[in-house]
Image: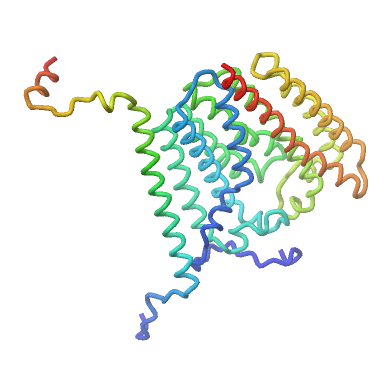
Amino acid sequence: MTGSSEYPVPLTEKQVAARRHRSIAIALALGALVLLFYAATIVRMGGNVANRPLAVTGVGLLKGVLR
Amino acid sequence: MAELGIQADISGTRDNTSSVGDFFELMKPRVMSLVVFTALTGMAAAPGSIHPVLAFIAILAISIGAGASGALNMWYDADIDAQMQRTVSRPVPRGRVSAEDALAFGSFLSAASVLMLGLLVNWTAGALLALTIGFYIFVYTMWLKRRTAQNIVIGGAAGAFPPMIGWAAVTGGVSVESMLLFMIIFLWTPPHFWALSLYRCRDYERAGVPMLPVVAGPTETRRQIVLYSLVFIPVAISPYFIGLGGLSYLAVSSVLGAVFLKLAFDVRRITEGREADAAAKKLFLFSILYLFAVFGVMLIEKIVLRVLA
């Protein structure tokens, strides 16, 4: 390695701008993916979301397993 | 390359200036639109129903899978693309996206689209999407394209799967009807691409791609276009006879089919000069219109039937 601190190579303004745009696009895509998985989960579970037991006690869980 | 006056860069150099638009272009948006359209028709034609949210996810996953195939194709074929006028301005040969970025982008989207379709819709559709991507990249792009004049005949299967995937997204299976939709696109592909390769013959020759006009000559290509068209049109009309298409489908597929055949015979008849190129171009453009029209009519018929039901 040379003494002239060439590393890391500084990015040009154009490179920084392009990277920022790519980062925003990836963030938006990930956000959309989270929403899609959430929506699909709700659609597939349907009414079962509302009908699920709201609390599970240790005894109830044991009964369920033994049944 | 010098003949085209381009500065193609397929070395994979990274300069970190690729824009979001460059990556989008890697996905071949025009091909994606045809894939989305045929997949949507497959979904609409399938018996049964699917929740609109799941239908949207299925179409999105199929289009991302098609885009991923396009990106991987552009990664592998960058050397060929750099030598062809039609493809020289693509992001990789232009140096706007490095080859390794195209590979990473395509690989990630392939896996993501298959997982999304499999996990959120069903695994039959997910498996068919994986098969489509694999077929397009490994069988067509890597194996057949540079080796045989039958490249687009067999490779055409990759472009024919989307309506079958759409059908599977609704029904969870494969049926005769969905295979017929597959056959329509499968048989449409050779006359469509051979018409293009007739007037782009020098491009393919320069790039060393053994398309039929390069290997067997334009006369044999013209003969094959007519033969495939004669088989294709009856198959394109046949959905009416198994109840997949209605009367309007029969009318549109028959009338436009007759025009398709006339244009195919024109290509066979006009063999010299600019008129020959014009005839081939006309068939190429009309073939796109034909596919959109027959799938469009089927889609409209199914939507109307569902609204009236």
